[in-house]
Length: 622
Image (cartoon, rainbow, N blue to C red; front, side, top):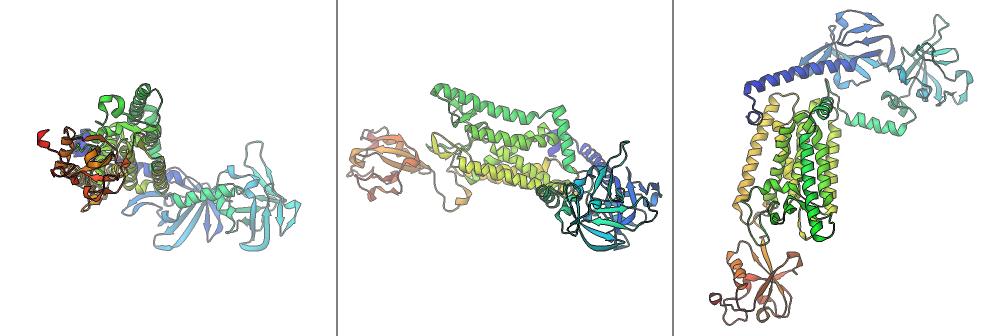
């Protein structure tokens, strides 16, 4: 229903497009699965190097020692309720859960305890002397020898601590473009049957030779490094890359979501261009720069830390486009709904606008590449509105500006993308860590940077409630109309649940805001701290020779009427506005203080109606 409203698609068109998407994704997954298997594999059984090489061709066809053995040995791609299967007609299938890019684990379907291992034979690029550096264990005729072998980076070989010059490794390169050769004395490494971890040695001059091999000891860190095609000498890099690959990479079957996203990104930048992201940042930044220039000309100095944007572009607009529910004079703005959208075009200081634009660029570019202009515009501004609604329920007493609600909606959309495409994402764990890190850095900047207006430090102009509301709104709208490569029944239930929850939250927040003329944060339920009208008052007879801070609650209409009335009385009263932060605390009733004290007073406690009091005012005769 929502897609039809936003994009004009009929239900039949949606079904047809979804079917085409499923067929395309399935074909891409099959092609990607076979692409990952292509190459030469060394057959291994019981961790002993096997006696033949299998070459997997495009489409799953297999050559055994260069010969095609028939369709029963070809690898097929099949779908099952548990996911895709890669199997052969002779009842062997690949155990995807225990296979990697370098190792294929095969299990016999009739007896899963029976397994075979294939190890990928690396390309000739790894063949250089420093690849042999480290410790090795000598094996002869399938049995481990007690000799300890250590190879240095220049090929020097130490056997049991002794240097034997004839055993040093030498690399010979062919002038006619043939394969390189590694020799040690009469022995030659059989690179066609060796892996990075197991080196087979032969004597070409002999018709028959013993089965001699070098193997990396399991505890040697270089063994792990070499399995991931890392230089054995770069231990620090090996540890980092190994951690990333082993801990953060998720093994998937088929084309990775990130690969498709990168392809969309390249086509998007080359052809369509990121129109929404650039327009959003240019408009927000341009409004801030224009207003700062205007203010700097008027003030005669440049203020890069000042509030600027739509609310400050024209003097008469000041205070009419930011997000607030009540003003310092108790004026209620809860029915001025345009503020829920226009507050995004005002920022406080260059730090605020620069960080928001940076987050929008980093998070928004890949999203616009996959979602397009209209969908991302809808999702971003849903976050802006969600931030405003959450602010009204959780805060409501401060003034908020900035497009952080939309920025945090982009975070929510990315998390929704993870939820909807979890099984297709290779680097899902890394993406979650990066998103959490970015959120933490933004909040640390907010905490230590202190985004507030230079002229009103008591009114913070950035709210965590707006951040949270924008994030939740982005998560829900992302689940509803965000990018989802493979849709099934569970996804549809998830989307409908997000729609229902979103409508319920909007209805609740809007009702809460409209019900409370004096904003009441939900966490203050039952113990609400009211909003006050603050003034400074002077009356020598009543208050002594000092200016006093006085206040009325915004909900006390009678008290506010008295404040307005004494401004026009002839009883020696004088009033002026004051910031609450400038008033001393605690607040006293009139009877609990003296004329010589500078205590702040509750205005409603002043005895205006008592004719015998020095504070008496005849409001009727003014």
